[in-house]
Length: 404
Image (cartoon, rainbow, N blue to C red):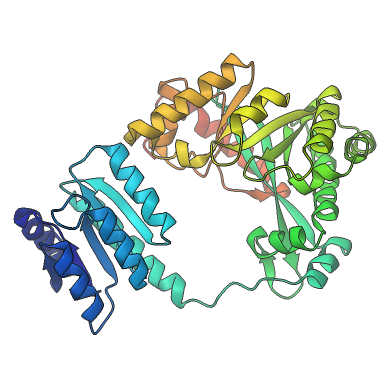
């Protein structure tokens, strides 16, 4: 791995160089001046794979350096270092990503050996992914065929109560069981469906299957709500609420058991029609959830104007909040706002024991969801998983085994 460290503090250069050598990377280029570093980057016979960069340097500061390396076309991994406060570090990290630079981490100095190990593992994983065959993206005719030939299947990710650990519902996540390629994930066909005006048909298939499954679980004694993601494109058809009522009636599912998650990362194409549809859905006592809250457009305006009764805090503000004062403040504010509006709050991105413990200990959010609890699974796996979860949750809620 070709590594460059830029920092005006000679001690930091020596320490980081020694840490990298201990981890098996002794060949490291170091530079104390950002101006000189640009010359090294531009004239290097082999592009650098990994760049450690201080953001506060004389003559040419870190912001200017990021602009220049982006213009140069740097494609390696970037690690930002600073003695500045976390918010400045986060702002520089965000700027670097806006420049299309691949930021692996941003931390206050000095770097800890375990942090450095994770950074190196991230870079190596990226190299492996880059050399792997590119994911296939399917065309409109193939997606249309999948929709109309019953090849779409629903997977379900459990959602649990923060107070009791009990499973209260699931989020529906569509997959494509391709006859040749096997299980295909949404990032390979959802965009095609949206661009080809197939998303309405796709969403309706997902809804029908989810409500049928909800009824099946009820018959088996599992009282679960079922959430389905709705595209803004679904909010262009005035008959959409009536369609949902008909499907729910056919499946014999009470409408309050259905949660429609609307992402706020998209602007409403037709705000009046969308507001008409969403208001009718709420009048029918269907739960409306604002998904990925805090990442998109007009969040506060949507909360004011639309009768949402659930707020899902984006995973980017949940995972790692125990270590980030900024994330923690945003998470708290989002939950407090939800409670003030009489809304239920859901924390997405509970990925490890630290996330779980943090939310549980501080009584943040009503519902939790994430890989620490369970990954999305086929409907057939839910019953066995719930039996396993019942044994695990008692330990977790009692503080036993919460580190694993």
